[in-house]
Every structure is written in structure tokens, then in C-alpha cells.
Image (cartoon, rainbow over all chains, first blue to last red; front, side, top):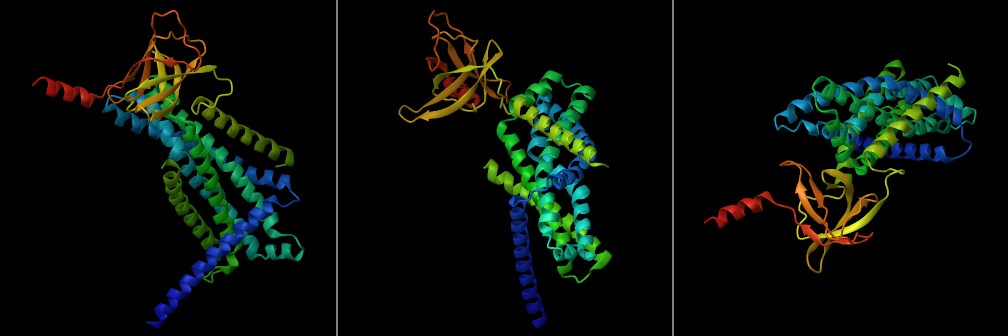
Length: 263
Length: 148
């Protein structure tokens, strides 16, 4: 009985501690972004790793998402005889929901896990402590460029995803299933508003922040892991944790942002 | 990979994102710095049910503008619709503006029927002749209750 109460208290304190540490970590990372000196090339290299190397996977996922939307949308809309709404259905669902969410999930899987493991191993092999010994601020040196890279790369990837998805919908709907080309694009132009594109932009920036925040945090504080598992196994656990936690947060925030902005 | 190549790839990547974004914004978001000049016209309707900001304005089936804003005149309970019409289209002062539906469940749009007057509406002018939106329920109920 006392055990149970003790565990409850311990869990709650751990939750408070983690939340606070995450908040402080976020604050120090953003403060270090704006504080000079700026190292432009390290940011460029992070964008290369985070964004440019993710383009291939984004292209493939985007193309097939768009094609599936075109295919499913066509068969559903055909029942009402309104195939000409296909363009707006594909474009709206891509721009409002699928673009930002699927891009974020793919980026978590490709870049987020790698970032978490990289920083976790640096913590493990005491490289972060070594940086501190040399009076180099590790947050400024390691974390801040990743934050900037994620904030820049996520919107770029999301908009590439949208365009490729719309093209995929065109391939499936117009080329394969024979929806009139004019109806596909004109319906899209008429129904998509600037507000939808702005929603997509807001979502992608916030998702980029969540991805980089969660994954770098989990790796950076590997040594404070409560399970007491460190070393190679600790890295693997922490990476799994980071991927799961970031993906779930993305889906929850997707709903929250949508309900705040659309209301 | 050396430094030049990394910078090149990142440059191309950012450029691709910027082009995608501007294509979406210009084509779909109607944020167009080069768009056709328009002039404002207002029209008053007793009901605009279903019309939205951004709905199209058609003349002879051709899109000639968009609905800018819709507001309620609290004095006589009429809807005041501000229209943006292309500069190239001249409207007579007896033009008729009516709210129509494309298809049965389609979007509402404003249909303009040109008049025969010699006086051309100026920017900020008002279209006097309007027809409110036709509601299917009202038509049906009228038919049912009048035929008794």
C-alpha cells in the first residue's frame, strides 16, 4: 500500500521534473539561436542532413499519398456523380492535414531518430562533457543549429510534399481514371484559400519544432534516464522513446492546431 | 562531400521549397502580386444564404471577379456584398446581380446580367437590381402550400 503511494508520488515528481527540464532545454536552445556568434555553415550542414537528404523519401511518400487520394476520392465521388470535385478534395486534404502530418512522421523516422541517437552517443561517450570542459557551450554548438535547420526544413519539405501529392492525384485521377484535367485544377484553384495554405505553414513550423525539440532533448539527457539503462542499450531505448513520443505529440498537436485555427 | 557541394544541395533544396510555396500561394491562395486590376462595386441582397467571401462572379459564364467582403446592414437588415470586378469589364448601372448555384449541391456564385443603359458604373458604385439566393426549401414549401 505504502509502495503504491510512494510510486505515485515518485512518478508525479518525475513528470514535473521532466516537464521543467524540457522547458528549460527549449528556452536555452532558443536563446542560443539568437545569441552571437552565428555559425552559418553548421546550420547549412544541418539543413543538408535534416532537409535535403529527406527529399527522396518525401517525394515517394507524397506521390503515393496523392495517388491513393486520387484513386479513393474518385471512387467515392463517382457515387454522387461529382468527380469534378476530385481536385479540391485532393488538394484540401493534402494541404490541411496529410502534408504536414505525414511529412513530420517521415522526418521523425528518418532524421529525428538519427539526431537522437547521435546526441545520445555523444552524451554516452562523454563528448558533451568534453565540450563543456573546453568552455564550448554544447547547446549552442550542437542543439541550436539543429533547431534552426528543423524550423527551415519542415515547411520546405511540407510544401514539396503538397506539390508532389497534387501531382500524384493528377496522375491517378486525370491520367489513369479520366477526370477532366481542367476540372481537376480549376476546382483546386477555386476551393483552396490562402487560409488553408497559412494553416499548412503554421502546422509545419510547429511540427518541425516538436520533432527537433523532443528528439534532441531525449538524446541530450540520456544520462538522466530513469530506467537506469545507459550505454548502447540506453541509446536504443531513448531513440525509440523519442520517435514514439514525437509521433504521438504530432498527431495530438495536429488536432489542437486545427481546432484552434479553424474555429 | 565537400563544403561547396553541401551548400549547393541546400540551396537547391530551399529553392524547391520556395517555388512550391509560391506556386501554391499564387495559384490557390490568390496572393498574386501581378493580378489583374479590379474595381469595387457593392450590391444589396435580401438574402445571400450560402454565398461566401471569395465566391466567384460570372458574366455570361465567364469568371470576371470575386466577392471581397460580406456585411449585414443593421438598419434595413440587408446583406451588403462588396464585389471586386476586373477593370476590363464595364458594367451598366442597370446590370442585374443574382445569386445562383452551380449544380444542386454546388457553390453559390453571383451571376451578372448586363443591362441596356448607357451609364457605366464607376468604381465604388452600387448595383441596384439584385435577385436574392433561391432556396430549394422555400420553393418546395411555396409549391406545396400555394397549391392547396
